[in-house]
Image 1: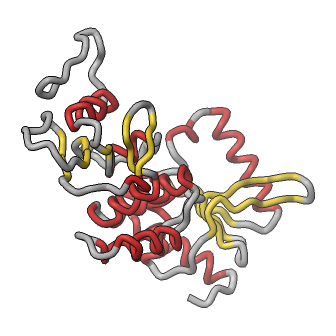
Image 2: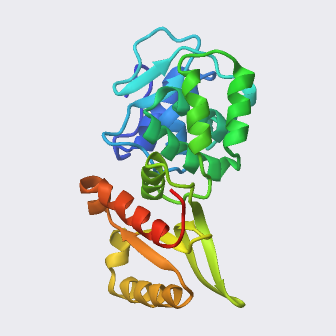
Length: 259
C-alpha cells in the first residue's frame, strides 16, 4: 500500500483495489484517469501487459504507490464525476486522454468501449479536443475520433475493423441487423449491406457445442437471403491478417464493389 494508506490484510489484491489505493493516496482532489478510468467504467479493454494505475493530482509531492503513474495536470471539474466514492474522468475525457497518449489501435479500442458507456461519437470527441486546446499528443485525437465506432462490441471487432479500413475498403457497418420479414435473423459484427458481405469474429465462446450449432443455422439462413459470411478467428487476425484482406477483397469484388 501507499504511505499512510492501509487496507485489511484479508482484502485480496485486485486492480480495483490498486486504483482505490492510488486515489486515496492522491487526496480529495485526485482523479482516476486514462486506462484506470476506462477500467473503473467497466470497459474491459486494457492492453497487455496491463498498464500502471493512473491518477491526476495537482498538489502531492510524495512518491506514489508502487505501480502507479501520476500525471500532474489538472482535470476540469466538468470532466470529473464521482463513481463508487472516487473522482473519475468522464468516459469522454478518458477517451480524449487515451487518444492523445496511447498507441493508436489501443486508443481506438478504448474509445469504442468508452463511447458506448458515455454515449458520444467521434464528432463529439473532436469538438471536445478543440475546446481543450493544445496539449501533449492532441494531434492524435482527430485520427482516433474518425476511427471511433460506438457500435463495436469487443476489442477484436475493433481490431478487425481497423484491418479492413487500413486496407482501403469501404467502412463496414458494425452490428448490422438482417431481417427476414418480421424476424431478426442476425446482428452481424461487420457488414457491407450494399453487397451483402459480412465479417464475423469467431471467439472462444463460439466453440461451445450449442453456440456452434446456432452459428451454423444462422449462416445457413443468411446464405439463403443472399449473404456471404467470412468467419475470422484470432488465428487469422494474429497470424495471417493478409488472409482477411484477401477474402474481403474477393467477396466485395465478386459482388460488384469498385475497390
